[in-house]
Length: 61
Image (cartoon, rainbow, N blue to C red; front, top):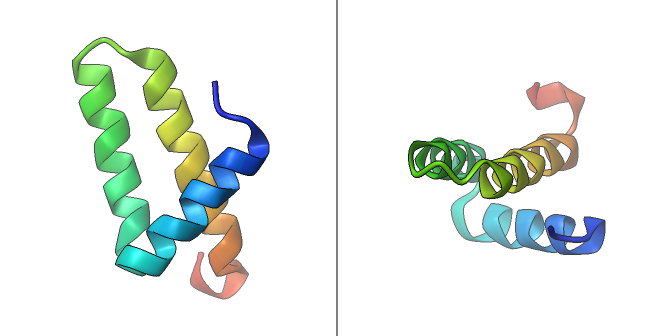
């Protein structure tokens, strides 16, 4: 399980690399993990996506 700091670090890096499309990429990763039966990793990807949503702010929700 990633720490909160790690989640926010990954979220920030993904936003820098992919812009707001990074949120969709994280959601795709979560679905892929669920497809493989890896629910714990899927949960981490959803946490990363949620962190990115918070970073972009309420004007983009």
